[in-house]
Amino acid sequence: MIATRNRVIFRALPASRPLVVRHDVGASQPPTPDPDWVADFRATHGRDPNEQDWQDHLLSLRYPGTGPNGEWLERDWQVYYRLVDLLGGDLLSQIGKPGGHGTGFYSGIGAFLALWKLEPGPDGTRIAYVRNFPAGGIPPNTTGWTWGNTILILEGERNNRPLLMHEYTHVLQYRHKGIGYVPNYLKGGLYNWDNNPYEQQGVEVQQIYEWNPWLPPIWEIVWVGGRSQ
Amino acid sequence: MRAGKIARGLAVAALLIVAVGILAACDTTYDLVIENHTDQRIAVTLYDSLVYELQPCSVQIASIAGPATPSGKGFRVSVRGGDGTALAQAEIQPQRLEGHTQPVILVRIPQEGDDACPASVKGVFLLVVRNYSQSEATIWLGDARLGTVAPLDQTAFGPLPGTWADVKRVKILDAGNNPISYSARAEYNLGEIPRFFIGFTAPRPRQ
Image (cartoon, rainbow over the protein chains, first blue to last red):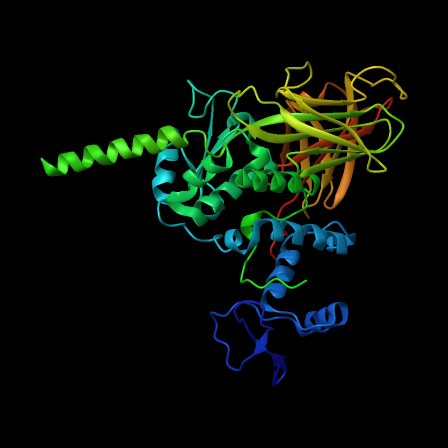
């Protein structure tokens, strides 16, 4: 870290490398770490923060935690990191990306099933709030169905935030696996969710949000990689 | 001619993929109701990964996702006592129950017989709303305005007549009258008025 006149300027590096100072940061650079926060972080964790730590900190400023005045308590961070570990870098790195290798094809099927009555959703998704067959686009007894970047949710579940997080987890899975997603999903077992890793991940994410309504939505996580314990 | 064949082939391939994958990532919502009618703590596991810990003589209700189409396959549930002893393992078939809009996975410990706890209170509930955002929110139950919840605060409304099914009728509006989605679950002691917890958040207003 180098001090430049009265301020400290950092540069983001990939993976878990520490934050590094550089001179002459341009206007397009993201906000720079607060030196006070850096000092606090060192005192608390006994190490230098990395870029992911800084992004996580920024997220904690945008969304209140469960502590006084919305501070994030230690247990809040534990829950957050549990979510991050559950999703893993493979999925988190898909946030903000459209997905490739067939994701668009699946999205198109979803749009067809929704009869193109789609609303813009978070992170480039499109959401249709629909009824069950035959009045609407999803099978009987179904409350959520994801095809690529298209999410179909039963009209009555519009306010069900954990369900939306479950379906968005499927979006990230589609983006990661592309055209291979459906065959891979079927290998896990259509009805045997005890052995289906995609649904295991979905239901665990859903449970985390049911118990922790304060958690920021997944799509707000800025993933640069290299989470440190 | 050749282009037509290619187009037909692609259409058939697409239909096949749709047919095979028609129910991939297709989810149904179930109400998981766990009633601990014993005087010991228990832990209930579903999908080998979701664990619900219950105090003696208590109830938890949560919404969980499960396979969409009736497959005849039950939900494998295992129950352990507070000391880790295996108490039960069963495949539970979802059932339709009064007071629930979704099929219910009902886990009752013990399944039948002696009951060491007070009877359940039915037909009324407390709606405990926790606002994790930094803006005031207005809470509606159907067409009835229940009141507001201050930023970073919690308010209990009720007792209100109704059941867990009424949680679906809750609407939360921010200061700009925009709907806010929320999480809901129930946790209470047998013999007490059921407490249904709702929580929601929103980004801090920009400075």
